[in-house]
Length: 66
Image (cartoon, rainbow, N blue to C red; front, side, top):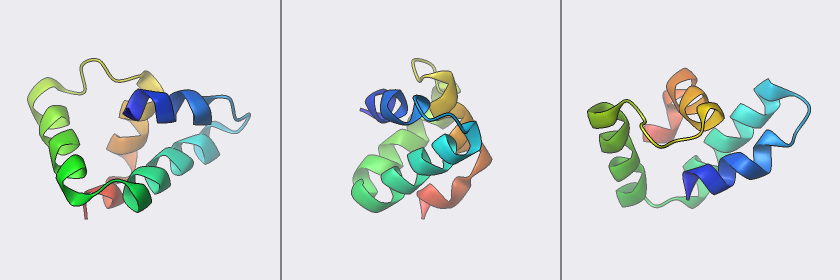
């Protein structure tokens, strides 16, 4: 699901704006359980299977964990 969000935002010409959009979307629309599972995945696998832009966005801006 995170990769599909990444697909949408990756089409934006401004990469920083796209990464911010990814983080904002996950923060606003994903319930806490989903964000916890995503965090566990990142911790255990280093984001294996995530699109580069998604992994980079989540690593750069950690506000989505809250």
